[in-house]
Length: 254
Image (cartoon, rainbow, N blue to C red; front, side):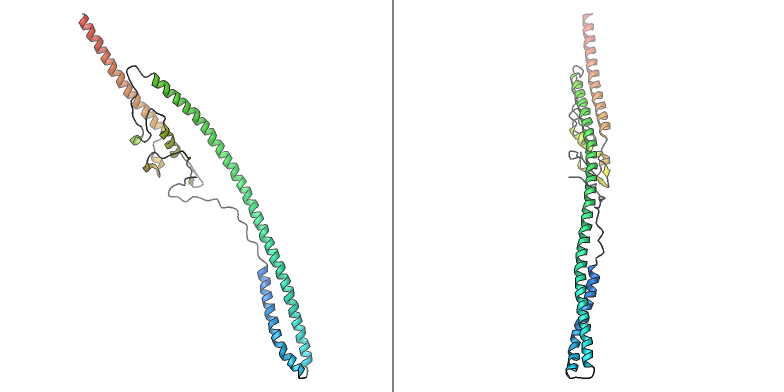
Protein backbone atom coordinates (compact mmCIF):
# COMPACT_ATOMS: atom_id res chain seq x y z
CA UNK A 1 0.00 0.00 0.00
CA UNK A 2 2.78 2.39 0.92
CA UNK A 3 6.34 2.39 -0.31
CA UNK A 4 9.16 2.31 2.21
CA UNK A 5 12.23 4.36 1.46
CA UNK A 6 14.91 2.17 -0.08
CA UNK A 7 17.86 1.31 2.16
CA UNK A 8 16.32 2.50 5.42
CA UNK A 9 14.30 0.88 8.14
CA UNK A 10 10.97 2.49 8.83
CA UNK A 11 10.56 4.21 12.17
CA UNK A 12 7.64 2.45 13.79
CA UNK A 13 5.16 3.99 16.22
CA UNK A 14 4.86 1.40 19.00
CA UNK A 15 1.41 0.86 20.39
CA UNK A 16 0.79 1.63 24.07
CA UNK A 17 1.50 -1.49 26.12
CA UNK A 18 0.10 -2.26 29.53
CA UNK A 19 2.64 -2.64 32.32
CA UNK A 20 2.42 -6.14 33.73
CA UNK A 21 1.02 -5.86 37.28
CA UNK A 22 2.95 -7.54 40.09
CA UNK A 23 1.46 -10.99 40.60
CA UNK A 24 0.56 -11.99 44.18
CA UNK A 25 -0.16 -15.69 43.67
CA UNK A 26 3.45 -16.92 43.23
CA UNK A 27 4.52 -15.78 46.70
CA UNK A 28 1.47 -17.42 48.29
CA UNK A 29 2.11 -20.59 46.28
CA UNK A 30 5.62 -20.73 47.71
CA UNK A 31 4.29 -20.50 51.26
CA UNK A 32 1.66 -23.16 50.54
CA UNK A 33 4.33 -25.50 49.21
CA UNK A 34 6.31 -25.05 52.43
CA UNK A 35 3.19 -25.66 54.53
CA UNK A 36 2.38 -28.83 52.62
CA UNK A 37 5.92 -30.09 53.14
CA UNK A 38 5.71 -29.37 56.85
CA UNK A 39 2.36 -31.16 57.10
CA UNK A 40 3.74 -34.17 55.25
CA UNK A 41 6.66 -34.40 57.68
CA UNK A 42 4.35 -34.16 60.70
CA UNK A 43 2.08 -36.89 59.33
CA UNK A 44 5.08 -39.14 58.75
CA UNK A 45 6.18 -38.65 62.38
CA UNK A 46 2.76 -39.39 63.92
CA UNK A 47 3.18 -43.15 63.66
CA UNK A 48 6.18 -43.10 66.00
CA UNK A 49 4.32 -41.02 68.60
CA UNK A 50 1.26 -43.26 68.29
CA UNK A 51 3.37 -46.38 68.78
CA UNK A 52 5.00 -44.96 71.92
CA UNK A 53 1.57 -44.07 73.29
CA UNK A 54 0.23 -47.52 72.46
CA UNK A 55 3.13 -49.06 74.38
CA UNK A 56 2.34 -46.74 77.29
CA UNK A 57 5.73 -45.21 77.41
CA UNK A 58 6.11 -42.40 79.93
CA UNK A 59 4.94 -39.03 78.49
CA UNK A 60 4.07 -40.60 75.16
CA UNK A 61 0.38 -39.71 75.39
CA UNK A 62 1.18 -36.03 75.96
CA UNK A 63 3.67 -36.02 73.10
CA UNK A 64 1.08 -37.59 70.81
CA UNK A 65 -1.50 -35.02 71.81
CA UNK A 66 0.99 -32.22 71.19
CA UNK A 67 1.88 -33.70 67.82
CA UNK A 68 -1.78 -34.01 66.89
CA UNK A 69 -2.18 -30.33 67.69
CA UNK A 70 0.76 -29.52 65.43
CA UNK A 71 -0.81 -31.55 62.59
CA UNK A 72 -4.12 -29.78 63.04
CA UNK A 73 -2.31 -26.45 63.05
CA UNK A 74 -0.46 -27.42 59.89
CA UNK A 75 -3.70 -28.54 58.24
CA UNK A 76 -5.31 -25.24 59.20
CA UNK A 77 -2.36 -23.35 57.76
CA UNK A 78 -2.59 -25.36 54.51
CA UNK A 79 -6.33 -24.67 54.26
CA UNK A 80 -5.85 -20.97 54.89
CA UNK A 81 -3.00 -20.74 52.38
CA UNK A 82 -5.07 -22.57 49.76
CA UNK A 83 -7.87 -20.06 50.28
CA UNK A 84 -5.32 -17.25 50.11
CA UNK A 85 -3.87 -18.70 46.90
CA UNK A 86 -7.31 -18.86 45.28
CA UNK A 87 -7.96 -15.25 46.23
CA UNK A 88 -4.51 -14.11 45.07
CA UNK A 89 -4.96 -15.87 41.72
CA UNK A 90 -8.36 -14.23 41.31
CA UNK A 91 -6.94 -10.82 42.14
CA UNK A 92 -4.06 -11.42 39.70
CA UNK A 93 -6.52 -12.25 36.94
CA UNK A 94 -8.56 -9.16 37.72
CA UNK A 95 -5.42 -7.00 37.71
CA UNK A 96 -4.32 -8.45 34.36
CA UNK A 97 -7.80 -7.89 32.92
CA UNK A 98 -7.83 -4.30 34.18
CA UNK A 99 -4.40 -3.69 32.67
CA UNK A 100 -5.56 -5.15 29.35
CA UNK A 101 -8.69 -2.97 29.42
CA UNK A 102 -6.60 0.12 30.11
CA UNK A 103 -4.17 -0.81 27.33
CA UNK A 104 -6.97 -1.23 24.81
CA UNK A 105 -8.53 2.07 25.85
CA UNK A 106 -5.18 3.83 25.34
CA UNK A 107 -4.68 2.10 21.99
CA UNK A 108 -8.18 3.12 20.91
CA UNK A 109 -7.50 6.74 21.82
CA UNK A 110 -4.24 6.71 19.87
CA UNK A 111 -6.00 5.02 16.95
CA UNK A 112 -8.58 7.81 16.91
CA UNK A 113 -5.79 10.40 17.08
CA UNK A 114 -4.06 8.92 14.03
CA UNK A 115 -7.38 8.74 12.18
CA UNK A 116 -7.78 12.46 12.78
CA UNK A 117 -4.31 13.12 11.38
CA UNK A 118 -5.07 10.78 8.48
CA UNK A 119 -8.14 12.84 7.59
CA UNK A 120 -6.16 16.07 7.90
CA UNK A 121 -3.51 14.69 5.57
CA UNK A 122 -6.08 13.61 3.01
CA UNK A 123 -7.72 17.05 3.21
CA UNK A 124 -4.43 18.65 2.19
CA UNK A 125 -3.94 16.02 -0.55
CA UNK A 126 -7.43 16.54 -2.00
CA UNK A 127 -7.10 20.30 -1.90
CA UNK A 128 -3.82 19.85 -3.75
CA UNK A 129 -5.56 17.54 -6.22
CA UNK A 130 -8.17 20.21 -6.94
CA UNK A 131 -5.41 22.75 -7.48
CA UNK A 132 -3.58 20.29 -9.74
CA UNK A 133 -6.77 19.72 -11.75
CA UNK A 134 -7.21 23.46 -12.27
CA UNK A 135 -3.57 23.87 -13.24
CA UNK A 136 -3.72 20.97 -15.66
CA UNK A 137 -6.87 22.39 -17.27
CA UNK A 138 -5.01 25.65 -17.90
CA UNK A 139 -2.03 23.72 -19.27
CA UNK A 140 -4.21 21.61 -21.58
CA UNK A 141 -6.24 24.60 -22.79
CA UNK A 142 -3.11 26.62 -23.47
CA UNK A 143 -1.58 23.65 -25.32
CA UNK A 144 -4.68 23.37 -27.51
CA UNK A 145 -4.73 27.09 -28.28
CA UNK A 146 -0.99 27.09 -29.00
CA UNK A 147 -1.39 24.16 -31.40
CA UNK A 148 -4.13 26.06 -33.22
CA UNK A 149 -2.08 29.18 -33.75
CA UNK A 150 1.19 27.66 -34.94
CA UNK A 151 2.55 29.98 -37.66
CA UNK A 152 1.24 29.10 -41.12
CA UNK A 153 3.37 26.54 -42.88
CA UNK A 154 5.07 25.35 -39.70
CA UNK A 155 4.35 22.44 -37.42
CA UNK A 156 5.09 21.58 -33.81
CA UNK A 157 8.10 19.26 -33.87
CA UNK A 158 7.71 15.73 -32.53
CA UNK A 159 10.19 15.25 -29.71
CA UNK A 160 10.53 13.67 -26.31
CA UNK A 161 11.82 15.61 -23.36
CA UNK A 162 13.72 14.96 -20.17
CA UNK A 163 16.91 12.93 -19.93
CA UNK A 164 16.76 10.22 -22.58
CA UNK A 165 13.16 11.26 -23.27
CA UNK A 166 12.01 9.96 -19.89
CA UNK A 167 8.99 12.29 -19.77
CA UNK A 168 7.52 11.26 -23.12
CA UNK A 169 6.17 13.57 -25.83
CA UNK A 170 7.08 17.21 -25.25
CA UNK A 171 3.81 18.50 -26.69
CA UNK A 172 1.45 15.88 -25.29
CA UNK A 173 -0.60 15.05 -22.20
CA UNK A 174 2.48 15.09 -19.93
CA UNK A 175 1.23 11.99 -18.11
CA UNK A 176 4.73 10.64 -17.52
CA UNK A 177 5.87 14.04 -16.36
CA UNK A 178 3.16 14.05 -13.69
CA UNK A 179 4.01 10.53 -12.56
CA UNK A 180 7.72 11.32 -12.35
CA UNK A 181 7.23 14.63 -10.53
CA UNK A 182 4.96 13.04 -7.94
CA UNK A 183 7.51 10.27 -7.47
CA UNK A 184 10.41 12.75 -7.23
CA UNK A 185 8.72 14.97 -4.64
CA UNK A 186 7.33 12.19 -2.41
CA UNK A 187 8.20 13.23 1.17
CA UNK A 188 9.52 11.30 4.13
CA UNK A 189 7.34 11.02 7.20
CA UNK A 190 8.48 9.11 10.25
CA UNK A 191 11.41 7.55 8.41
CA UNK A 192 9.27 6.33 5.50
CA UNK A 193 9.00 7.71 1.99
CA UNK A 194 5.35 7.73 0.96
CA UNK A 195 4.63 7.71 -2.77
CA UNK A 196 1.22 8.35 -4.33
CA UNK A 197 -0.34 5.19 -5.81
CA UNK A 198 -0.24 6.60 -9.36
CA UNK A 199 3.25 8.10 -9.09
CA UNK A 200 5.94 6.30 -11.03
CA UNK A 201 9.69 6.46 -11.48
CA UNK A 202 10.38 7.39 -15.13
CA UNK A 203 13.26 4.92 -15.48
CA UNK A 204 14.63 1.93 -13.57
CA UNK A 205 17.76 3.83 -12.52
CA UNK A 206 15.64 6.50 -10.78
CA UNK A 207 13.60 4.07 -8.67
CA UNK A 208 16.09 4.29 -5.80
CA UNK A 209 17.44 7.72 -6.72
CA UNK A 210 14.48 10.11 -7.10
CA UNK A 211 16.73 13.14 -6.65
CA UNK A 212 18.34 12.37 -10.00
CA UNK A 213 15.04 13.13 -11.76
CA UNK A 214 15.00 16.55 -13.41
CA UNK A 215 12.34 18.80 -11.83
CA UNK A 216 9.27 18.72 -14.05
CA UNK A 217 8.94 22.46 -14.63
CA UNK A 218 12.61 22.74 -15.55
CA UNK A 219 12.22 19.94 -18.09
CA UNK A 220 9.02 21.48 -19.52
CA UNK A 221 10.64 24.88 -19.95
CA UNK A 222 13.61 23.31 -21.69
CA UNK A 223 11.23 21.41 -24.00
CA UNK A 224 9.19 24.54 -24.76
CA UNK A 225 12.38 26.44 -25.52
CA UNK A 226 13.47 23.69 -27.93
CA UNK A 227 10.04 23.70 -29.60
CA UNK A 228 10.10 27.49 -30.01
CA UNK A 229 13.63 27.33 -31.41
CA UNK A 230 12.56 24.73 -33.97
CA UNK A 231 9.46 26.68 -35.03
CA UNK A 232 11.50 29.88 -35.25
CA UNK A 233 13.88 28.05 -37.56
CA UNK A 234 10.92 26.92 -39.67
CA UNK A 235 9.53 30.46 -39.75
CA UNK A 236 12.94 31.89 -40.74
CA UNK A 237 13.29 29.32 -43.52
CA UNK A 238 9.79 30.04 -44.85
CA UNK A 239 10.38 33.75 -44.64
CA UNK A 240 13.65 33.45 -46.55
CA UNK A 241 11.97 31.30 -49.19
CA UNK A 242 9.05 33.71 -49.53
CA UNK A 243 11.33 36.73 -49.78
CA UNK A 244 13.53 34.96 -52.30
CA UNK A 245 10.52 34.02 -54.40
CA UNK A 246 9.14 37.55 -54.21
CA UNK A 247 12.49 39.02 -55.21
CA UNK A 248 12.78 36.67 -58.15
CA UNK A 249 9.36 37.75 -59.48
CA UNK A 250 10.34 41.42 -59.17
CA UNK A 251 13.48 40.80 -61.27
CA UNK A 252 11.48 39.11 -64.09
CA UNK A 253 8.88 41.85 -64.08
CA UNK A 254 11.55 44.53 -64.55
